Image 1 (cartoon, helix red, strand yellow):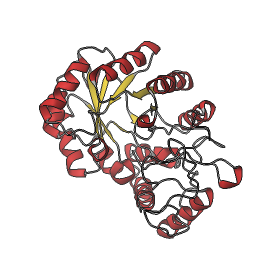
Image 2: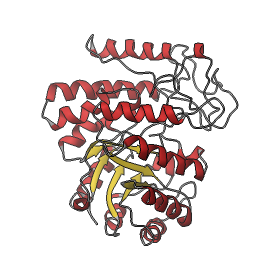
Image 3: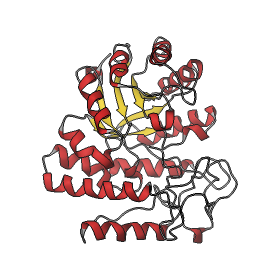
Length: 339
C-alpha cells in the first residue's frame, strides 16, 4: 500500500470523547459531535486519538468507541481510529478489531513513556505491520509520546506495506515540512496543528488536517482547509489568525481565562474521577457549572477546560484581535490540551 491506495483528504477532526459525571462514555453525546462535524463539512474523523483520550480508556472502552464511531459516521466520511499502544500485541489486537468492524484506517502512535532508538521504533511498527491488514497512518507527536518520528525515520517507515500516511503533530514547522518533503510521494501527509500553520501546510501540498480545534471551532476550523484549497487568500488568512489566537489562549497555562489564575491550582470543577472530560449538553460543548455536571479529575494539569462564560471571554479576546467578524465559538470539551 501507499498514498494511492486510499482516497483520504480534507479536514478530519480528532474528536473528543464525551463522558458522564460517573466516568462512563456518553455515547449519545459522542455521536452528536461526530454528526455535527460531518454536517459542518468534515471529510472524516479520528476517534480515540490523543484528543479522544485513549490513554484514559480501557481496551474494552476503546473498542466500544470504535463501534460507536463506525455507527455514527455511517459511511459519510473516512473513519480513522487511534489504536496505538505500548506493546505490539496490544496495538495489533486493537487494530484488528477496528478492521473487523469496518473502520477505514488506524492512526498509530509509537510506543510511549520509554525512550526508544529509531531502530526500536521501526521494529515496533514492522512487527505491527506484519500482523494487520488495515491501512496505517503514522502519528508523530513527540511532545506527548516521547518518541519522535523524524523525517528520515518516517521515510523508512513508509516502506512498510500497510503504511499509507502520517499525521505530523510535532508542532515544529521545520520538522513538519522536512517530513512532508521526505514522504510526499509515498505517503499522505496530514497537518496536526492546523490552527498554527494549517494554511501554509495546505498551500504547500498537505493532503488534509487532523486537528482538535473543530470540536469547539466549527465550521471555522474546517473552513481553514477549504478556503486555502480554494485559493481564498483573505479568508484563509483570517481563519489562520483566529486559529493562532485560539491556540495561544488554550495553551496559556491558565486554569480559567476569567480568573487569571496560573498553573498549580486545582480546577474548581475537579470531581476526583479518572479524567477531566465531561458529558455533553450539546455535542462538542462543555456543560457549564449551572447544569450540575463537572469534569472528571484530570491526569494532567488542565489547560483546556473552560466554562461557557470563559468561552465568551475567548470570543471577546479573539474579536479584539480580529475585529467584529470573528466567528462564534462553541464551548470546548478538551480536558488536557493534547492534540
